[in-house]
Length: 306
Image 1: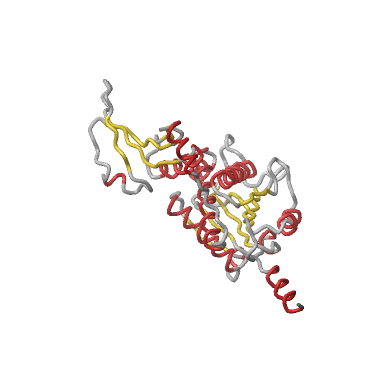
Image 2: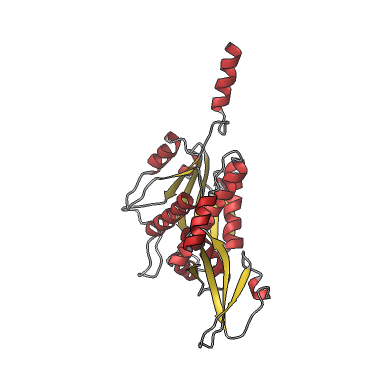
């Protein structure tokens, strides 16, 4: 009996023990209230605290809508300012699994641009693994310049929300508000969507690798699929139209993540062909991929109901 009790106690102390049913992600929009964070030289641009909150909420919406068994909590959802101590306490007391702090960068040299993901140190293997996924997503899927992963040695100092949180923790710098192109990108709705969707995909990939026993994929029953088919409740992305036919395997389409379908139109318009890609069960799913497709050069693409 005593041995059994010891085994049970040991199992309950494991971070990913068999009974865990969900992963809790805390999203921390940096700054807030009287602390605006960094500012762009463009007076019409949002402050860092506002951009951080917009990206955080978009990321949280993607996680809440598109996957199962991931619970999203925030350090703030409005223009308030939890202190650094309070942010750390929130994360530790709620026993969250992932902590992601969202920020924008600045530099005296206005030519400096790109993304960075910070960890406390290079020995924090879980945090380092998540940081690598994030920077890969920013670089390969969003087309941002990755400045790599930074730790306390690079910064010549510690970041409190990374040093004192007890779970997998990263701080993401989404771009430089002191660089004109980065600032314009981060102040655009598309730019915020692209960053948020990259963070969403990063969390999804990390959770699948780290918590393989927790099923986060949303499943659709045969009954739901039947209803969707009969009601036309499915979505695709129209990427372009053309006067003359373009083959669906054309080189210009190869960078897209989905197969392209060409449709011939019976119309008096000179544009006789339209091109779709992707097949989605919800508008929200289509919107995530729309931002990626726009980043591949199809800036006029839009979601359509099939």
